[in-house]
Image (cartoon, rainbow, N blue to C red):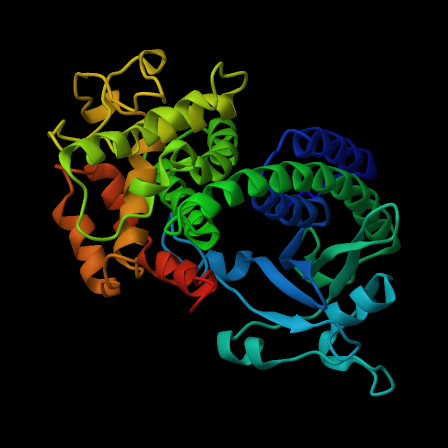
Length: 414
């Protein structure tokens, strides 16, 4: 394998830095930072963690050796865990001291060091962690955002080697640019969170964990759908970045629905109330009018069409409507022509599956949670009627990751 000269690596870093600045979603950006850092120094594996109070929480783990053992299109298991920031673990030590750590062999750390390497994961998976470089991701003011850890650098012959002084310089240079991009993405994330908290205050069913799960499900569904359809890489990365954020706005239009209707539990809606409730799709779309970016367009598509049915059935809404014909004062959804099939935007077809699955599998004020098996079966049963069959196929192919996301993002009361 030709790893490239120092000049090649610097040019690679410059090219990647430009792309980082275009990524809007924090999670997508974190994944990209880990991937690109590994590429720069040809590292086989790595993880990226974010600070959560006095703990570090893993966001992404990557391992090319294990990935090669999977069937095409499959991903490594979705991992989620956290641990306190202290000097006993390598990442915790780096977070605590604020200094990078270059370890030549994780199995031969001196007993004089306060930190140790936990071999349990290696023993369970048959992997051998050797060289490791861990560095803090710090803002200019010194505040810690997280920790980046890369493992097992390989030379041109695929032999595991140590991380060199040159590698350290390249990684630290790239990390400084990555932190700038992260700070910008966090500003976007905080703005999105405030907007969604407003919707949560209005609708007790529209919890932030629900929104986060729907967003994460949607990203995973799209990743598999894109693999199944051989989507070009540039389009793939651009689309998933927008989708991760836009999916969160699927029900934001509920901020414009009366509390009398929004918080009603029993009896269920009258026909008039149901018609008013349907207006949340149009209100949500109006919030992004006029659309000024690809993200605005996708957010509008999802808010407006995530309740449309694949078969154009009567229970789908709002269909082919002019959002400017709707007045929040009257709350009456205008007569519409149903949308069906691929006339419904792809992002909305994906979120439709993610939203219904999450609603089924979690308790609501008007129902108990369905079992995971029953919720998956219901999605499958509605393939080709309510849902796009190709989206359902992608969803069923990633069942394990969907289940892992559920466990990783529980409702606050659970």
